[in-house]
Image 1 (tube, helix red, strand yellow):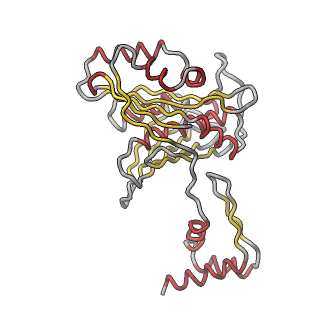
Image 2 (image 1 turned 60 degrees about the horizontal axis):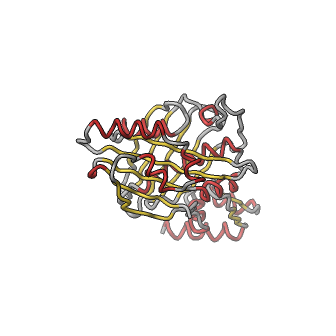
Image 3 (image 1 turned 180 degrees about the horizontal axis):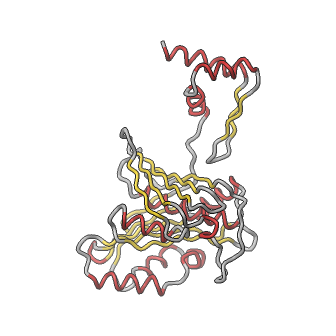
Amino acid sequence: MDRILRATAADGFVKMSLVSAKDTVQKAKEIHHCTPTAAAALGRSLCAASLLGNMMKEEDASLTVRINGGGRIGSVIAVSDSSGCVRGYVTDPTVDLPLRADGKLDVGGAVGRDGYFTVSRDLGLREPYIGSVRLVSGEIAEDLAAYMLESEQIPSACALGVLIDTDLSVKAAGGFIVELMPGAPEEYIDVLENNIFMMDQLTTVLSEDGEEEVFRQVLQGMEYHLVGEEPIEYKCYCSRERVEAALISVGEDELRDMAQSGEPVEMSCQFCDSVYRFDAEDIKALLIKSEENEN
């Protein structure tokens, strides 16, 4: 089961959130027919959005991570609700690059580095809260850490990873954010930096030992307590009613032209690939509904 786990350590001076998202990323890979490199870029972004979304206190809020570094993959979009359930897509899921010299997927090469890591929070107010930082590497975890520091003013350590198996399925996926609270002694910073530097690769730990071992390695030398757990999944909120509302929003003149053409209209969801079909009679009904709303 995919889930987010939260822990506190060092008398509350350290907070850590961990997401394990193998099935979530596998579903995203299948929906969008992603290559391994595209799956890693999208999967890391979904994990980042899930962690940030789960931190929101507003129940009906949503959070969007947008990454555009000028690379061949185009834009990477990941959206989370306040529980950490996510959906997302990349502009070009067919992009695949040779492995890096260290044998890892070249996510930074696919994403690019000439652009921004942007987070938009929709809290139900008139305007969303938007924070943006220039990309550091395009590898996403470093960019997330830069966002946390520059935009949120929270010193953080971040790791994100997607491990693709030999059969091209997702073997492991996840990420963590470790936050230092104001007033944290310098010694805690040193301990965390050393622990994270010495720990095994995140996806290897998740696939072989599980979430508890990630906490143990990252927070080694500190007393910690698990304080929360929440299941997550790949979850799209599209529906025929929402698509109808989108069609009505194009205006009566456009709807009238669609109805007169007699051709069916098909609209697909970028997040889940669901296709909604409207024939001429459906469009006429929407036109009547639009006219009634005007009156």
